[in-house]
Length: 92
Image (cartoon, rainbow, N blue to C red):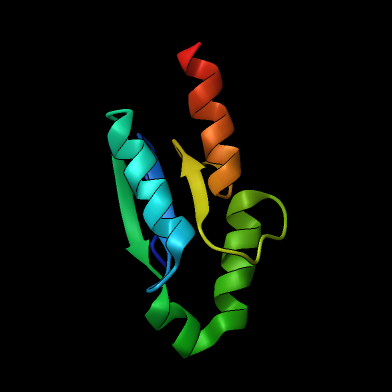
């Protein structure tokens, strides 16, 4: 299976269905008028969870197994709280 790579401009959120922090990540990016691409990973996880996690580890430069998995201009940010810190620090 081929996985979608993070976008080079704006944010990329790798999320899954019924993930409250995935929804919150989209909401805060919209609140800050930030461009983002949302990738639902349900099919990736069903097809080959281990390969998907290896893909994320390679893209992020470290292992990250919780959702959401967020990138900014293809650079790994982390999860929801990491995103909040970046956006709120930039807003000061």
